[in-house]
Image 1 (tube, rainbow, N blue to C red):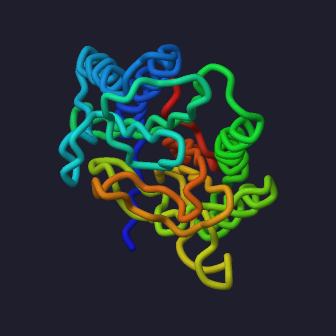
Image 2: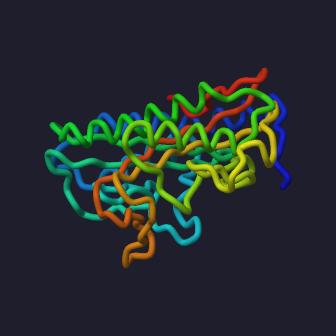
Length: 252
């Protein structure tokens, strides 16, 4: 496994690409209102990304048709934007990628529409709090499997379960690079596999299910739901390891 170590100047280029992602996500957060269609939100984010001199890197990636993954209610990740108009009580996840001067950015948030149920509030909080808890835990020399265990323990301690078969990932000159970072421990020992080093840049993205970890891909070949078909949530940041600690790059 060859995990790239980025120089400070390269990390700054990645920060620039990711800052645009953060700005696009904040724009969508502010415009998540009853009556807005998913296609309108997708177009709004794409216009913003292009206005910043970047490209929406998800558009056309592996055949994905849109700039933003809009994952509605039971869809946890990879939702394709449709003409559906948001309704009170919906839960919507936005996942956005950018490319700026050959460097990539990637982050995600989940937002409630108007008043949402207390269970959905806990569901969204689980994804967000797990993400920040995992980022805070990162130290140089820690193994990626240890980080996966932190993610899993954080999710399960809140009464939810991680989505299986999808994961966080390295990022840099490509949108997806080594390593893969599941939100659960694979194998028996967290003291195995590669260690986290200064200069590494990667995405952490807890994907939260309520009861069943197993994914189901819907007929459009993109929307991923849990086997329980209950609401899900998703949060993501791109981080760089600088001076032994994780620094978030994908803030607006």
